[in-house]
Image (cartoon, rainbow, N blue to C red; front, top):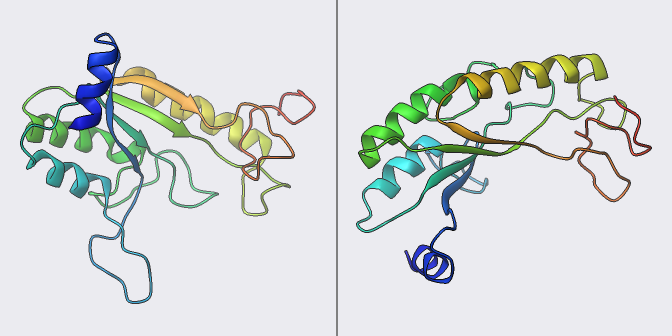
Length: 168
């Protein structure tokens, strides 16, 4: 609440996102494992807080494993691209308005740098599919591919280009 008010005071035209949620979480504590909450549950809980304001929901709908396809099926309240429509419907219901979605991180790591990653050809096909899904969704206002060009300083190898600048 304080951050939203301060940002809008400094720049009334600024857009402020809530969330920055990941694709999955555990809504039930697991012994010896850090506790998390799924994005659908987090949004539902946040909607109960009076006076929370935001302009959009930021989300990372990564597949749940390195080799998984963009539209892999997951059980809601986890949110990948396949359950994004359900999430948007529930955001609308919880916040009583259409909530724009910003996909602020998405990508597929590639082999050989990521042993469990996908081939360059798979990454290309998955990128087209993920971007196509986002383009067709009127609530998605932003889509950011995580890491445009691989680099030696970044352990995440999801770039659409190799470190040399060569297209994958």
